[in-house]
Image (cartoon, rainbow, N blue to C red; front, side):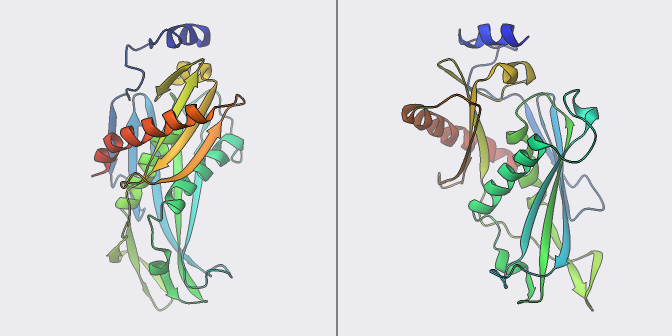
Length: 252
């Protein structure tokens, strides 16, 4: 399938007949986990990912005494793909979590100062857990949409007598921006978006670009051993900015 997908892609064709810059059908549903402060599921073709947000309290970092924290974790379960094994998060899961974390953090989507309970003593710690339910390519873009939808669904619990009152909320989490991540892939001299698993195996290099609603590029992550030229990067960024507008509409 890898060779078959490669031969098609170098001739501007795809296994499922899509255009090179066309995403598969995407659907997003929020509020799917009752015990989470925020949650969402995103399906992109056959790829399916659930994201949940859990609010905990903790001490702030020494260099940000009046700011809350964000932690993103990703779990690749063996049920979602024969490529995944049971056990602690591997390199791929760690990288996915870091890319999602960076896109949220560097876009300044969350005002972490508003997550401060008592400066230097107690802050809200926002845990975003990403679970791969079915892997059929383009995990990063799908995971980021799921994470952003879950954050948009998040409510901050009441905190009374140094205890979290689960199920009773003081406010909704305010999001200052609406970033999305677009991964542009390259095969030979061709560019494509949203590869399925067979196409992804044939991809030589990928560039994930986090784009805010004001077209500000806030994060970049390259994957793959091959080099990309400055001209390639410019084309990839232009494609990401254009496509980000399409993806962002799904988060409204």
